[in-house]
Image (cartoon, rainbow, N blue to C red; front, side, top):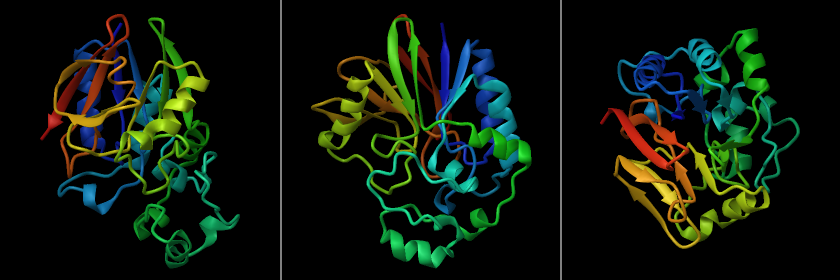
Length: 250
């Protein structure tokens, strides 16, 4: 069985179309999206990129059997995250101007651009995003896997905090253990390569073939969107634990 995993599309419809085309050639049996279908950061908004939020949502809806919500997706539907990572959101958060949100966040939350504030999605797109969960637990080939956009207790990736030390992943690994999961795959990190970790190690690998297991209890998927770092997707084969990284740009 081949499982294609993609993340962080950020409205980049051309890159998403290319990824789905390659997944079809690779004969993936199932495709999973790990969030941030819509929205974008100007740092990852490369020149010549075509942004089409509604079309990206349609492609994910039609091609992905499983999907979770990311921080930009939550912002698009003006929904507070369920897993708030102890950040105290005011109940009227999304009615506040950007400057006020920034003052309250004090650098703890991602800043969303004014164009994102004013973005409009169709009713069908809003309904699809509203139905997505912040995490899923699925079993593939006897391996129980936690799927989310980022790490517990910030499963949607709404905070700016990124893992730097192995201890930064411990809450997530404990969350996995409570749910009987042997492995976890997330998106969100936008690093060059694949960030992997366990209780004792956290490092980025540029390998394109490796195995999920005790050395790699958790790993992040590279982004679909082009700009900033290499873009692409991963294929996971549950029967062997093999992970293959496919680049569509460098």
